[in-house]
Length: 132
Image (cartoon, rainbow, N blue to C red; front, side, top):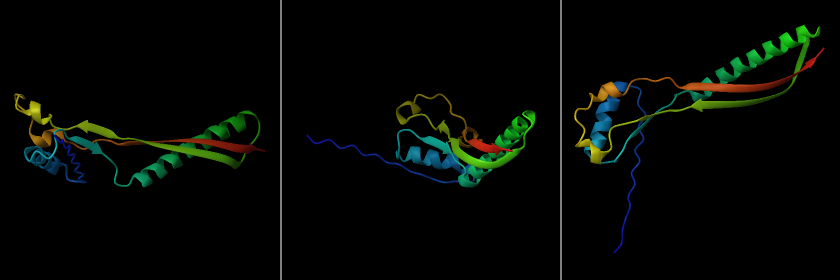
């Protein structure tokens, strides 16, 4: 006997959240997948990361300036910097897996489950400044 395993991945990029519920329901009804997962991402992730880095650098520079003033010196040029950015993806479990769907008493309307979410982008900047 030969066995086969088939996997199907469907990726949709939508901006209109009112379409998410009906589309995922159609995929479930078509038996395209046993479970569904919804990920929220930013369309302009690079722009968000750049803004986070700029903000982190500004805070690092302000802190370094405060240390320089407290020591009676002035802040010089930036001599080294390292940057790390992190996007905390928001994963929301979609519909109930197919085998359990028949046992579910009542499910909320499809559009009630999917609403816009916040995606947080953070940046960590290590900055080394010369002192004058």
